[in-house]
Length: 182
Ligand code: HQG
Image (cartoon, rainbow, N blue to C red):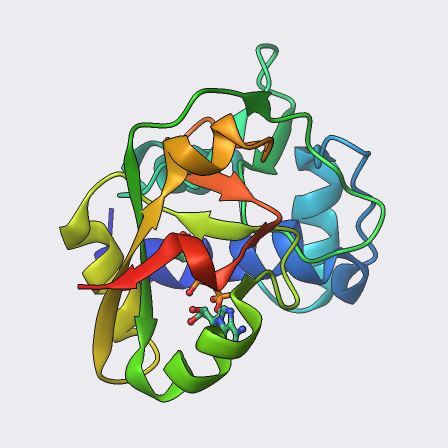
């Protein structure tokens, strides 16, 4: 399958399954699931041709495993990264490793020092287990910098950490006192 078409479709699916389902008249349930037939029909109205084969190819080729299909193959959801209201995935609460990492851009550092890491428009702050993933996440917004988070210590003091199906760690907020700039 054509890589360009897979990438474009992946971006479109991220947009409607995480942020703007209403843009194509799609309904997500509280766990983020969308009916694939309705997704295909909604996309067609916006002149975007999707079919089951293409959707399955995007799900299985996603480098970050961004999407999952229901067991019956009839529904699809994004596994994390949502901003849309009405969706609240029941992520698994889990003990994190001693350190987790967050990639950001240097231009955000001053504000992060003041407010800590905040979720912004998404439902959670996203953290990763390895430095290289964090670095590539930070690169999306400018000169990257990787922040090291004292995750286990935060949890011992009462913070809740969740892990999405694709391994991304999620938390509501990281106060600056648990962040070091490596
Ligand atoms: C920054 C991608 C100023 C934060 C990635 C980030 C990820 C602050 C930006 C997923 C701040 C939000 C999410 C503060 C945080 N002041 N800036 N107090 N606190 N920020 O895109 O974590 O490819 O919403 O550092 O792999 O960059 O889409 O979050 O730079 O897992 O599947 O505000 O998106 O996955 O940006 O990325 P985002 P993110 P996908």
